[in-house]
Length: 322
View 1 (tube, rainbow, N blue to C red):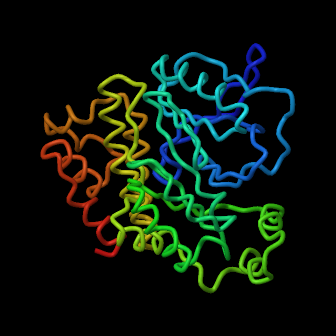
View 2 (cartoon, rainbow, N blue to C red; view 1 turned 120 degrees about the vertical axis):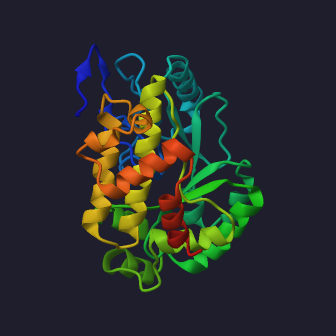
């Protein structure tokens, strides 16, 4: 869905919620509220490349309550109060909101999901700032070639995050354009330029990072917030989240692409169906669903009947190296 004008406001871009994108379902089309670089967790991109729009506040989003998670990217400090008012308004309407923050920033909106972006301390090497993150918080660690994608950097930062009591640090590999790569290389050693444009010999993947994080008892996937929908829809979304995470893990471990995509196909079906999947399990009628393959069907049945996830637990254990 593209963003269109509506009475001077803009409608949000809609995307399928995925574990790699922090379960975001709606996000602004453009965001020029920052004078600093930031990790765009909805697009897995680098934000802050354009100059902020001077003299203007945060863009208003058209429409009433949204039925899933809405993303509010970071803002300059002078806009933080306006951002919090917007977040509070969306939460009061029944919309789930993910607010992205800089380290040291506070958002006091109850009910909003807060995610801290680690890009700035990783670029500046001021890793001591990681100790100031709130206990139980969620953080995003962008994997940038030559800067933050190698085990030496992980071993510097992960113990600090664990000491602060951070609950989850999710790594993301960014899709960087040549312009963004040049911006990141400015003022840095030639080896960083080479890594950004030609690949890093020491660089690791999201799976490699996850294994280091697991050694420090840190989770690497944020749990999906189940908000902004009726009980049956929330139940289906919970099932969709389990299926999507299984597909994500399967593909990251470079297993069969077809089998991994089958999990994602099942997740999309669970996300959009008008059927009550839990009721179908209890009635032993889940086999009528043609978009569920055998592995996905078994996962759904186990979750609904027993509240356990043997398949998913096995995949996660393999992913983090247990």
